[in-house]
Image (cartoon, rainbow, N blue to C red; front, side, top):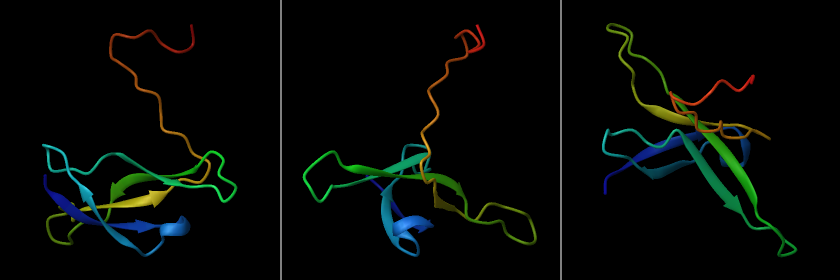
Length: 89
């Protein structure tokens, strides 16, 4: 499988660049979870990062790549299918 060096911004991983596996479309996953083990042996803490564009070129405004931004206390959105009912009902 192919991987791509992807920078992380914010949180404990700020400034680090990790190789992240890319999918068949060439994009890394939308959300990246990093489990951090607890010191007392309890449940691990999950660090959550969201994929965002890293920038755009000046001349043609093409996207340069991806980076991950830290989402403190965030949760991944639930999977919604097009045929599912609206959540207000």
